[in-house]
Image (cartoon, rainbow, N blue to C red):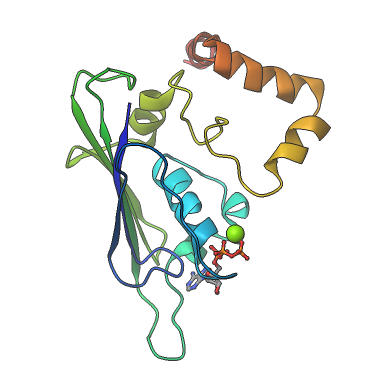
Length: 180
Ligand code: ATP
Ligand code: MG
């Protein structure tokens, strides 16, 4: 299920609207220290539903909005859009083309969109369950994450294996049913 493009606007160091097109094969992103490479992977995790500001190297979620520089004033909104070719139905939707968007304003209000329609965070996270692509999945390995697996508690390591094996979805559904 190929990733098609990522558009970042007002997220961290990306003050201007920036689109990265992913063609077939491997995409490499290179640049000097501090140029924004990690910010790109964080934008991907964020649009996929990341809820922890700390894991995005901030104290509060609005810290991800462009904070201004010597030459530009701060922005009031961050927006990230990720598009997929879902012809092979890896994502839990019948739509062949999937576009997800997340927006956040300085006052903390936020919105998620699925193919241009407003939706809940849960609709976004449900899309990725058992796809091997969720924000916690090992499709995205940040700096330091490999050590984290080896040093993690057995229960946490089990969750990673369950997600990979496709059992995690059923455990999540059971937990939701118990809470309802
Ligand atoms: P390295 O090679 O060292 O890993 P990198 O290319 O991964 O570097 P990032 O960590 O993605 O770089 O980018 C860090 C830059 O992003 C810093 O210059 C930091 O000031 C900037 N930055 C982070 N948050 C914001 C924000 N909210 N507004 C503006 N700039 C930001
Ligand atoms: Mg980095």
